Length: 327
Ligand code: NDP
Image 1 (spheres, rainbow, N blue to C red):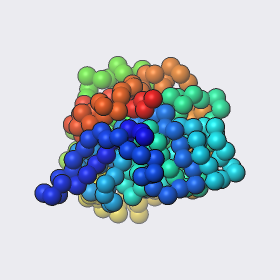
Image 2 (cartoon, rainbow, N blue to C red):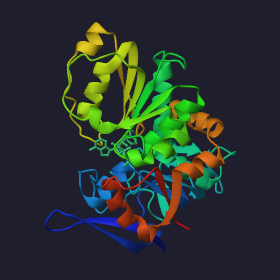
Image 3 (cartoon, rainbow, N blue to C red):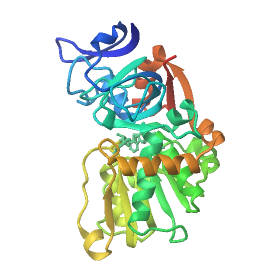
């Protein structure tokens, strides 16, 4: 038997979240059963747990788009019993029971080995957010952006992806400008490595198709007018990565920055990212993060606290990351 956060759809269509005790026989099909040490709360988990967006596509659902744990049963020789593993995305918490439970069962093809240099908590503190931030940094560099080219703007900077993006870029020598709705967290963002912190409101509303050139690159976590304005402010030949939709899913932009300034808009997806890219991202994360950074960004809470915390995440009240301890 094990404990899980379970989401059920009520007759009125709303999402009901509660902690339930389940039998391992109820777990979905998969080659590998994992004793989950930690999961985390990501924006998508907040949407699923509160029912604010149709993230869950099969009911009932255990949310949790990521997990870190130890293999307890395996039909795959690559991941024998005792292997410490990470799983991110692949539809966990959307189509397949996810990480906010003490047990999970997944196909072997979804698994990444936990880097030896990190503890299970370290890997969880990075989680999908840190891994997505690293995918964004790798995408900027794959498209030719280099430290020294000019400022890189990070939006949603106090969130999970944003906090890691600020720190990872700063550690690679970039000049990072952080956009946030929480200017009272300025010192926190400077501590993570930002050189400038500014009010997200300056990007939040409709702007001109081409604006004064500012950014050599961008990591955008919020979409909508913010992404459109950032594209309009990106320097000739610059690169904008888009991973999020915290402001909105819309993209009210023109093609002007792309056809007149050669700006590249690079999409970042963590859920179905190919295994080689996942491994590269986790290898870089193991080399470029340390205990003090992870502790600066992440805090730990219990499964019982996860429902309240998901509601606070949706209100924009959480700084950085929340690791859920499933022990
Ligand atoms: P968080 O909730 O931790 O952070 C989101 C941040 O966005 C907030 O902290 C806030 O930052 C900012 N924000 C919130 N509401 C608004 C708004 N209305 N307008 C502008 N900014 C806003 O979420 P995560 O860091 O986990 O995820 C960030 C985004 O990235 C989400 O949209 C998520 O779905 C997406 N994502 C995508 C992935 C992918 O594979 N493509 C993987 C992981 C996340 P501040 O207070 O600093 O303004």
